[in-house]
Image (cartoon, rainbow, N blue to C red; front, side, top):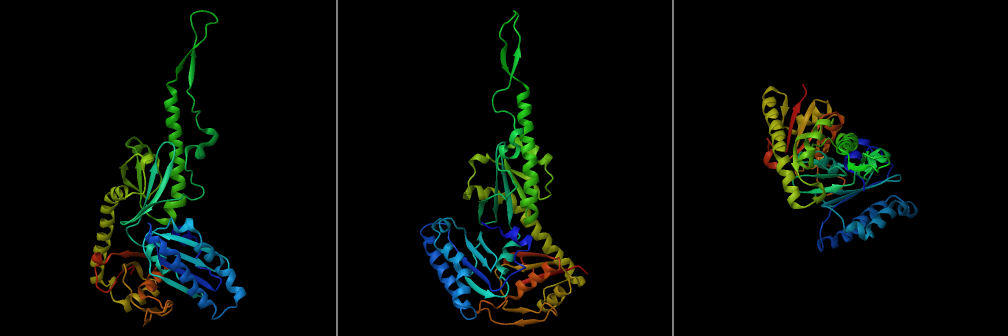
Length: 384
Protein backbone atom coordinates (compact mmCIF):
# COMPACT_ATOMS: atom_id res chain seq x y z
CA UNK A 1 0.00 0.00 0.00
CA UNK A 2 1.28 3.49 -0.85
CA UNK A 3 2.08 6.04 1.86
CA UNK A 4 0.77 9.61 1.72
CA UNK A 5 3.77 11.17 3.49
CA UNK A 6 6.38 9.42 1.36
CA UNK A 7 4.67 10.22 -1.94
CA UNK A 8 4.15 13.85 -0.93
CA UNK A 9 7.81 14.20 0.06
CA UNK A 10 8.89 12.61 -3.23
CA UNK A 11 6.74 15.04 -5.22
CA UNK A 12 4.85 12.23 -6.97
CA UNK A 13 1.66 14.29 -7.12
CA UNK A 14 3.28 17.28 -8.80
CA UNK A 15 3.75 15.63 -12.17
CA UNK A 16 0.71 14.15 -13.85
CA UNK A 17 0.31 12.90 -17.39
CA UNK A 18 -3.35 13.85 -18.16
CA UNK A 19 -5.98 12.69 -17.85
CA UNK A 20 -5.49 12.68 -14.08
CA UNK A 21 -8.04 10.63 -12.14
CA UNK A 22 -8.68 11.33 -8.44
CA UNK A 23 -11.13 9.27 -6.39
CA UNK A 24 -12.03 9.70 -2.72
CA UNK A 25 -14.53 7.90 -0.53
CA UNK A 26 -15.23 7.17 3.14
CA UNK A 27 -14.77 3.51 4.07
CA UNK A 28 -15.56 1.27 7.03
CA UNK A 29 -13.34 -0.98 9.12
CA UNK A 30 -15.91 -3.54 10.24
CA UNK A 31 -18.54 -5.90 8.90
CA UNK A 32 -21.34 -5.43 7.87
CA UNK A 33 -20.77 -1.69 7.21
CA UNK A 34 -17.84 -2.41 4.89
CA UNK A 35 -20.03 -4.42 2.51
CA UNK A 36 -21.24 -1.21 0.91
CA UNK A 37 -17.73 0.14 0.25
CA UNK A 38 -16.87 -1.74 -2.99
CA UNK A 39 -20.31 -0.88 -4.38
CA UNK A 40 -19.79 2.81 -3.72
CA UNK A 41 -16.31 2.53 -5.18
CA UNK A 42 -17.65 1.04 -8.42
CA UNK A 43 -20.15 3.90 -8.66
CA UNK A 44 -17.32 6.41 -8.35
CA UNK A 45 -15.29 4.57 -11.01
CA UNK A 46 -18.35 4.76 -13.27
CA UNK A 47 -18.45 8.52 -12.68
CA UNK A 48 -14.80 8.74 -13.74
CA UNK A 49 -15.60 6.72 -16.85
CA UNK A 50 -18.53 8.97 -17.77
CA UNK A 51 -16.30 12.01 -17.42
CA UNK A 52 -13.54 10.43 -19.52
CA UNK A 53 -15.96 9.54 -22.32
CA UNK A 54 -16.60 13.23 -22.92
CA UNK A 55 -13.04 13.66 -24.23
CA UNK A 56 -11.38 10.29 -24.82
CA UNK A 57 -11.91 7.18 -26.94
CA UNK A 58 -12.68 3.79 -25.43
CA UNK A 59 -9.26 2.35 -26.28
CA UNK A 60 -7.67 5.10 -24.14
CA UNK A 61 -10.15 4.79 -21.29
CA UNK A 62 -9.93 1.05 -20.70
CA UNK A 63 -6.20 0.92 -19.78
CA UNK A 64 -6.71 3.82 -17.37
CA UNK A 65 -9.58 2.13 -15.56
CA UNK A 66 -8.23 -1.44 -15.48
CA UNK A 67 -6.39 -1.18 -12.12
CA UNK A 68 -9.39 0.54 -10.50
CA UNK A 69 -11.73 -2.19 -11.73
CA UNK A 70 -9.34 -4.84 -10.42
CA UNK A 71 -9.26 -3.11 -7.04
CA UNK A 72 -13.07 -3.04 -6.96
CA UNK A 73 -13.08 -6.86 -7.14
CA UNK A 74 -10.27 -7.39 -4.61
CA UNK A 75 -12.17 -8.91 -1.68
CA UNK A 76 -9.12 -9.05 0.57
CA UNK A 77 -8.51 -5.32 0.09
CA UNK A 78 -12.07 -4.36 1.06
CA UNK A 79 -11.93 -6.55 4.16
CA UNK A 80 -8.98 -4.53 5.50
CA UNK A 81 -9.84 -0.88 5.00
CA UNK A 82 -9.55 2.07 7.38
CA UNK A 83 -11.77 5.18 7.52
CA UNK A 84 -11.18 6.63 4.08
CA UNK A 85 -9.72 5.82 0.68
CA UNK A 86 -7.89 7.86 -1.94
CA UNK A 87 -6.90 6.65 -5.42
CA UNK A 88 -4.81 8.61 -7.92
CA UNK A 89 -4.36 7.37 -11.49
CA UNK A 90 -2.77 8.70 -14.67
CA UNK A 91 -1.10 7.08 -17.66
CA UNK A 92 2.05 6.28 -15.67
CA UNK A 93 1.03 5.67 -12.06
CA UNK A 94 -1.59 4.12 -9.82
CA UNK A 95 -1.52 5.11 -6.15
CA UNK A 96 -3.85 3.80 -3.44
CA UNK A 97 -3.98 5.26 0.07
CA UNK A 98 -5.86 3.91 3.08
CA UNK A 99 -6.72 6.89 5.27
CA UNK A 100 -7.31 7.13 9.01
CA UNK A 101 -9.94 9.81 8.53
CA UNK A 102 -13.13 9.84 6.43
CA UNK A 103 -13.12 11.95 3.26
CA UNK A 104 -16.09 13.17 1.21
CA UNK A 105 -16.93 11.17 -1.92
CA UNK A 106 -15.28 12.69 -4.97
CA UNK A 107 -14.50 11.55 -8.52
CA UNK A 108 -12.49 14.07 -10.56
CA UNK A 109 -10.89 13.95 -14.03
CA UNK A 110 -8.63 16.94 -14.60
CA UNK A 111 -5.22 18.08 -15.84
CA UNK A 112 -3.73 17.59 -12.36
CA UNK A 113 -4.38 15.39 -9.35
CA UNK A 114 -6.89 16.60 -6.75
CA UNK A 115 -4.75 16.23 -3.61
CA UNK A 116 -6.27 18.70 -1.20
CA UNK A 117 -7.88 16.05 1.05
CA UNK A 118 -4.48 14.34 1.30
CA UNK A 119 -2.69 17.60 2.09
CA UNK A 120 -5.26 18.33 4.74
CA UNK A 121 -4.60 14.97 6.39
CA UNK A 122 -0.84 15.52 6.19
CA UNK A 123 -1.08 18.90 7.93
CA UNK A 124 -3.37 17.85 10.79
CA UNK A 125 -1.69 18.67 14.08
CA UNK A 126 -2.74 15.54 16.00
CA UNK A 127 -0.82 12.95 13.94
CA UNK A 128 2.02 10.89 15.42
CA UNK A 129 3.98 7.66 15.03
CA UNK A 130 4.83 4.93 17.53
CA UNK A 131 7.92 2.72 17.47
CA UNK A 132 7.20 -0.56 19.29
CA UNK A 133 10.56 -2.13 20.08
CA UNK A 134 11.91 -5.25 21.76
CA UNK A 135 15.33 -6.92 21.66
CA UNK A 136 14.26 -9.01 18.70
CA UNK A 137 11.81 -7.05 16.56
CA UNK A 138 10.15 -3.74 15.85
CA UNK A 139 6.82 -2.44 14.61
CA UNK A 140 5.70 1.00 13.46
CA UNK A 141 2.27 2.46 14.16
CA UNK A 142 0.74 5.69 12.90
CA UNK A 143 -2.29 7.42 14.33
CA UNK A 144 -4.22 10.47 15.41
CA UNK A 145 -6.63 11.19 18.24
CA UNK A 146 -9.23 8.85 16.73
CA UNK A 147 -7.27 5.97 15.21
CA UNK A 148 -4.03 4.02 15.54
CA UNK A 149 -2.88 1.41 13.03
CA UNK A 150 0.20 -0.66 12.39
CA UNK A 151 1.89 0.28 9.15
CA UNK A 152 4.30 -1.71 7.02
CA UNK A 153 7.84 -0.43 7.59
CA UNK A 154 9.43 1.10 4.53
CA UNK A 155 11.97 -0.81 2.47
CA UNK A 156 15.32 -0.57 4.22
CA UNK A 157 13.88 -0.71 7.76
CA UNK A 158 14.95 -3.92 9.55
CA UNK A 159 11.98 -5.50 11.28
CA UNK A 160 13.92 -8.15 13.22
CA UNK A 161 17.35 -8.41 14.83
CA UNK A 162 18.24 -11.20 12.41
CA UNK A 163 17.40 -8.99 9.45
CA UNK A 164 19.49 -6.17 10.91
CA UNK A 165 22.59 -8.08 12.01
CA UNK A 166 22.58 -11.22 9.86
CA UNK A 167 25.83 -13.16 10.28
CA UNK A 168 27.02 -10.75 12.95
CA UNK A 169 24.33 -11.93 15.36
CA UNK A 170 25.63 -13.79 18.43
CA UNK A 171 24.99 -17.55 18.27
CA UNK A 172 21.76 -18.32 20.10
CA UNK A 173 23.28 -21.48 21.62
CA UNK A 174 24.74 -21.24 25.09
CA UNK A 175 28.30 -19.97 25.15
CA UNK A 176 30.58 -22.33 27.10
CA UNK A 177 34.05 -22.18 28.60
CA UNK A 178 36.24 -25.14 29.37
CA UNK A 179 37.82 -25.48 32.78
CA UNK A 180 40.41 -28.27 33.02
CA UNK A 181 40.15 -30.95 35.75
CA UNK A 182 42.91 -32.02 38.14
CA UNK A 183 43.86 -35.14 36.21
CA UNK A 184 45.40 -35.48 32.81
CA UNK A 185 42.87 -36.11 30.06
CA UNK A 186 39.95 -35.20 32.28
CA UNK A 187 37.05 -33.77 30.28
CA UNK A 188 36.53 -30.05 30.80
CA UNK A 189 33.53 -28.80 32.76
CA UNK A 190 31.11 -26.58 30.74
CA UNK A 191 29.64 -23.46 32.34
CA UNK A 192 27.54 -20.60 31.02
CA UNK A 193 29.94 -17.82 30.25
CA UNK A 194 29.40 -14.50 32.01
CA UNK A 195 30.21 -12.69 28.79
CA UNK A 196 27.15 -13.97 26.97
CA UNK A 197 24.86 -11.35 28.52
CA UNK A 198 27.26 -8.63 27.40
CA UNK A 199 27.24 -10.06 23.89
CA UNK A 200 23.44 -10.14 23.81
CA UNK A 201 23.30 -6.57 25.13
CA UNK A 202 25.72 -5.58 22.37
CA UNK A 203 23.45 -7.26 19.80
CA UNK A 204 20.43 -5.39 21.15
CA UNK A 205 22.29 -2.09 21.04
CA UNK A 206 23.40 -2.65 17.44
CA UNK A 207 19.84 -3.63 16.50
CA UNK A 208 18.47 -0.50 18.19
CA UNK A 209 20.99 1.67 16.34
CA UNK A 210 20.04 0.13 13.01
CA UNK A 211 16.34 0.66 13.74
CA UNK A 212 16.94 4.24 14.87
CA UNK A 213 18.81 5.13 11.66
CA UNK A 214 16.27 3.46 9.39
CA UNK A 215 13.17 4.86 11.12
CA UNK A 216 14.64 8.36 11.03
CA UNK A 217 15.46 8.15 7.33
CA UNK A 218 12.36 6.33 6.06
CA UNK A 219 9.59 7.38 8.46
CA UNK A 220 10.38 10.38 10.69
CA UNK A 221 12.01 12.63 8.10
CA UNK A 222 9.36 12.08 5.39
CA UNK A 223 6.45 12.50 7.81
CA UNK A 224 7.83 15.07 10.26
CA UNK A 225 5.69 13.44 12.96
CA UNK A 226 6.55 13.09 16.66
CA UNK A 227 7.72 9.56 17.49
CA UNK A 228 6.82 7.76 20.72
CA UNK A 229 8.81 4.74 21.94
CA UNK A 230 6.74 1.81 23.24
CA UNK A 231 8.97 -0.75 24.93
CA UNK A 232 9.80 -2.50 28.18
CA UNK A 233 11.14 -0.04 30.79
CA UNK A 234 14.67 -1.53 30.68
CA UNK A 235 14.96 -0.58 27.01
CA UNK A 236 13.87 3.04 27.36
CA UNK A 237 17.21 4.44 28.53
CA UNK A 238 19.31 2.48 26.03
CA UNK A 239 17.28 3.57 23.03
CA UNK A 240 16.98 7.21 24.07
CA UNK A 241 20.72 7.35 24.84
CA UNK A 242 21.75 6.09 21.41
CA UNK A 243 19.00 7.64 19.27
CA UNK A 244 19.81 10.49 16.88
CA UNK A 245 16.17 10.99 15.89
CA UNK A 246 15.11 14.58 16.65
CA UNK A 247 11.44 13.57 16.27
CA UNK A 248 11.67 11.09 19.19
CA UNK A 249 9.86 12.60 22.17
CA UNK A 250 11.24 12.29 25.70
CA UNK A 251 8.26 10.36 27.05
CA UNK A 252 8.01 6.60 26.51
CA UNK A 253 5.23 4.08 26.94
CA UNK A 254 5.81 1.07 29.21
CA UNK A 255 4.48 -1.89 27.30
CA UNK A 256 5.59 -5.31 26.10
CA UNK A 257 5.69 -4.97 22.29
CA UNK A 258 4.82 -8.65 21.81
CA UNK A 259 1.41 -7.95 23.33
CA UNK A 260 0.66 -4.92 21.16
CA UNK A 261 -2.36 -4.70 18.93
CA UNK A 262 -4.12 -1.75 17.37
CA UNK A 263 -6.72 -1.83 20.09
CA UNK A 264 -8.69 1.01 21.64
CA UNK A 265 -6.82 0.48 24.92
CA UNK A 266 -3.43 0.86 23.27
CA UNK A 267 -4.59 3.89 21.26
CA UNK A 268 -5.96 5.57 24.40
CA UNK A 269 -2.72 5.00 26.30
CA UNK A 270 -0.71 6.44 23.42
CA UNK A 271 -3.01 9.45 23.03
CA UNK A 272 -2.80 10.20 26.76
CA UNK A 273 0.96 10.53 26.25
CA UNK A 274 0.77 12.52 23.01
CA UNK A 275 -2.16 14.84 23.83
CA UNK A 276 -0.31 17.22 26.21
CA UNK A 277 2.28 17.90 23.50
CA UNK A 278 -0.46 18.37 20.90
CA UNK A 279 -2.31 20.86 23.11
CA UNK A 280 0.92 22.66 23.96
CA UNK A 281 1.76 23.03 20.29
CA UNK A 282 -1.69 24.39 19.42
CA UNK A 283 -1.60 26.79 22.36
CA UNK A 284 1.78 28.06 21.21
CA UNK A 285 0.49 28.69 17.68
CA UNK A 286 -2.60 30.47 18.96
CA UNK A 287 -0.49 32.63 21.29
CA UNK A 288 1.89 33.47 18.44
CA UNK A 289 -1.02 34.58 16.27
CA UNK A 290 -2.46 36.65 19.10
CA UNK A 291 0.79 38.48 19.70
CA UNK A 292 1.63 39.01 16.01
CA UNK A 293 -1.74 40.21 14.73
CA UNK A 294 -1.72 43.59 16.55
CA UNK A 295 1.74 44.26 15.09
CA UNK A 296 0.53 43.73 11.53
CA UNK A 297 2.37 40.41 11.39
CA UNK A 298 -0.77 38.30 11.32
CA UNK A 299 -4.27 38.34 9.86
CA UNK A 300 -7.54 36.43 9.67
CA UNK A 301 -8.79 38.34 6.61
CA UNK A 302 -9.06 36.01 3.62
CA UNK A 303 -8.22 38.59 0.97
CA UNK A 304 -5.23 39.92 2.89
CA UNK A 305 -3.91 36.45 3.67
CA UNK A 306 -4.28 35.44 0.01
CA UNK A 307 -2.14 38.37 -1.13
CA UNK A 308 0.42 37.60 1.58
CA UNK A 309 0.52 33.93 0.59
CA UNK A 310 1.23 34.75 -3.07
CA UNK A 311 4.01 37.09 -1.92
CA UNK A 312 5.61 34.40 0.24
CA UNK A 313 5.00 36.33 3.47
CA UNK A 314 3.08 33.62 5.37
CA UNK A 315 5.28 31.65 7.78
CA UNK A 316 2.47 29.68 9.45
CA UNK A 317 -1.12 29.21 8.35
CA UNK A 318 -3.79 27.81 10.67
CA UNK A 319 -6.80 26.35 8.83
CA UNK A 320 -10.02 25.28 10.50
CA UNK A 321 -10.65 21.57 10.06
CA UNK A 322 -13.75 20.64 8.04
CA UNK A 323 -14.32 24.28 7.03
CA UNK A 324 -14.87 24.90 3.33
CA UNK A 325 -15.12 28.25 1.54
CA UNK A 326 -16.14 27.69 -2.09
CA UNK A 327 -13.99 29.52 -4.59
CA UNK A 328 -10.52 29.88 -6.06
CA UNK A 329 -7.32 31.80 -5.40
CA UNK A 330 -5.39 33.28 -8.31
CA UNK A 331 -1.87 31.93 -7.71
CA UNK A 332 -0.34 34.97 -9.40
CA UNK A 333 -2.26 37.91 -7.92
CA UNK A 334 -3.91 36.41 -4.84
CA UNK A 335 -7.32 37.58 -6.03
CA UNK A 336 -10.26 35.57 -4.68
CA UNK A 337 -13.15 34.26 -6.75
CA UNK A 338 -16.03 32.78 -4.77
CA UNK A 339 -18.07 29.99 -6.35
CA UNK A 340 -20.10 26.87 -5.60
CA UNK A 341 -18.59 23.60 -4.37
CA UNK A 342 -21.35 21.47 -5.88
CA UNK A 343 -19.17 20.66 -8.90
CA UNK A 344 -16.30 18.30 -7.98
CA UNK A 345 -13.69 20.37 -9.82
CA UNK A 346 -14.54 23.55 -7.93
CA UNK A 347 -11.82 24.47 -5.48
CA UNK A 348 -11.90 25.48 -1.83
CA UNK A 349 -10.25 28.80 -0.93
CA UNK A 350 -8.78 27.45 2.30
CA UNK A 351 -7.16 24.50 0.56
CA UNK A 352 -5.84 26.76 -2.21
CA UNK A 353 -4.26 29.03 0.40
CA UNK A 354 -2.75 26.04 2.17
CA UNK A 355 -1.22 24.77 -1.08
CA UNK A 356 0.21 28.22 -1.82
CA UNK A 357 1.79 28.56 1.63
CA UNK A 358 3.36 25.10 1.38
CA UNK A 359 4.73 25.92 -2.08
CA UNK A 360 6.35 29.04 -0.63
CA UNK A 361 8.01 27.08 2.17
CA UNK A 362 5.55 27.96 4.92
CA UNK A 363 3.91 25.70 7.50
CA UNK A 364 0.24 24.74 7.36
CA UNK A 365 -1.56 23.34 10.41
CA UNK A 366 -5.14 22.08 10.39
CA UNK A 367 -6.81 22.94 13.69
CA UNK A 368 -10.10 21.75 15.24
CA UNK A 369 -12.84 24.39 15.18
CA UNK A 370 -12.94 24.66 18.98
CA UNK A 371 -9.25 25.63 19.09
CA UNK A 372 -9.15 28.10 16.18
CA UNK A 373 -8.33 31.65 17.35
CA UNK A 374 -10.56 33.20 14.66
CA UNK A 375 -14.02 32.82 13.22
CA UNK A 376 -13.01 33.17 9.57
CA UNK A 377 -11.56 29.68 9.22
CA UNK A 378 -8.03 30.99 8.84
CA UNK A 379 -5.23 32.59 10.86
CA UNK A 380 -1.91 33.57 9.29
CA UNK A 381 1.36 34.46 10.98
CA UNK A 382 3.64 36.49 8.69
CA UNK A 383 7.41 36.34 8.24
CA UNK A 384 7.62 40.12 7.89
